[in-house]
Picture 1 (cartoon, rainbow, N blue to C red):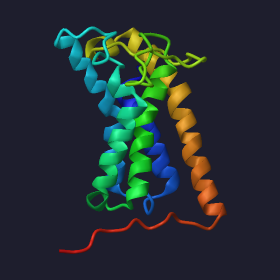
Picture 2 (picture 1 turned 180 degrees about the vertical axis):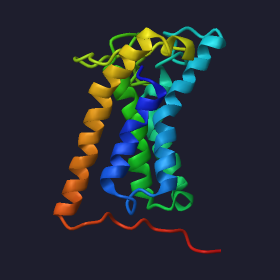
Picture 3 (picture 1 turned 30 degrees about the vertical axis):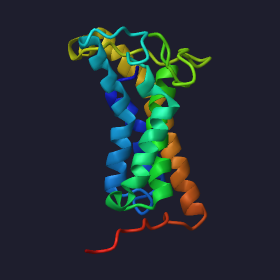
Picture 4 (picture 1 turned 120 degrees about the vertical axis):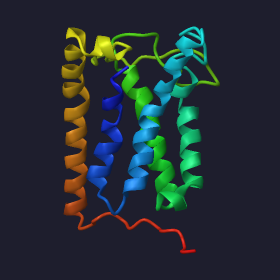
Length: 187
């Protein structure tokens, strides 16, 4: 898995590229949370749940079904997120799905249960270019951690910066500042 910090790169890049009018602070916070939430499954190790189990690391919480569930919750919470339902669902769902897709690009682990509950099979992308992050802060702060961070800079943060710049340029080119989110009625 990439580090928890790098999973946030995708919603941050999307928000920067789409602009504050399209992705306000609350929606951005929800997207960042959705992008890191799947890794709470590392708690399964402490509970004695095997890595390869559907409830284990990179199991159900890394599936597109889980991302769709978070998208549905975002649509329900859209008034609180100060966004239109479709925008909230799409942004949060994309942020959550990006977690699994980034994990599929790593060079370690057992793969991602992308199609759970329909399949327990674990998947990797054809290109496994991101150095897998060690689990645990102590290991991340060592020499291996530096390799991981440099890999993430190259394969996540620089492309995310390009995505943000491209979206912002397209927005400026088309004369749009981003659509204003619907705000919930007062009272």
